[in-house]
Length: 426
Image (cartoon, rainbow, N blue to C red; front, top):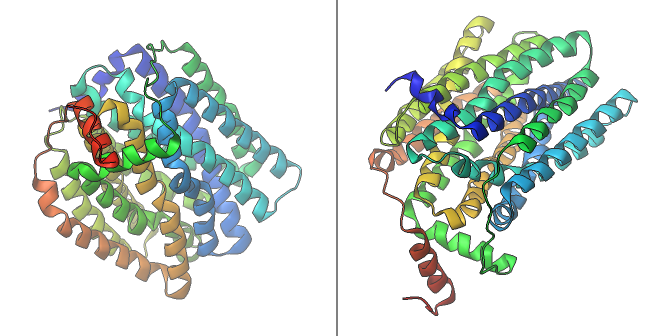
């Protein structure tokens, strides 16, 4: 095992284009997200409203991700991605114009964040499931999924740091404009990709039947439902510790937007190193053990960080916690994609988005509300304790081997039988 394995997936022309477009676009997205959170916190001085900002952007994924998964299974995923990217670009343009012309209303910002969340609900299942079409070698799948996560983590390092400087010297409008311009790159890269032939399902059913089919499949696959439960618990109760970071930046360390940008960048650096380490794994055999170790690291790190009063030490702990927390989504994503059938993968990944990105806004709102009642330090200590408890409860599952994927059509036929109680298949 070596880090050179992490980059073998770039032998694919399509994946190189896909990665490049996402890299540029998500730098802009993180600049916009950092600016929105900092503006709202400075306007309201409330951690609860920071949680509300995260809630309005990401909660649509909780509601609409199953519909996004069905869309990803029904239609050409490249075309779905193109529509979602254009929609996200329009949202960034509207936010830029609104802020530039003095419409600084909190509810305008939150409403436009909700529009972005709706686009993401359809974007995420298509973007994640398309990796299987781009990468032909199954041994490269963990690398591809981890590199996808590294895009988010690398941009989480670069974007907030750039946003902190831009906010301090030029204002939020330039952050929003940078995000709008960045979508040009992803749209051009998608246009240059060589699309494989897409054959829509011949037995297209109504939306409810397809939802029920995906739900029954998820319930019957123990590996999938255990993974979804673990990811949901961590996303809801633990990963939302970043909601508290503006409080530490402004109230504990007496900092400004740059301080918040440095904290977010340190978290992103740890997350980037984590995903590169995951990407360096050839195959999936060790992923569960790595996840278990990282949950222990994250829980311990959060407990220690709740007592830290030195800004430099807090940056170090942010790096450690970023390393631990950002392994959850790529490893769980890889486990689910490894054991799920291609014909139903989009719907399964829709449930995955619902369990992760859908629960994050609920968790952010919950953590912000609790922090208003007690203190951010006590909430962070509690999150670390919960993380260790979750790791202990799932320790047996995380020590078990990953089962091979079932024959796709046979399992789907069984699911149809289970859901209708009338088996038409042998």
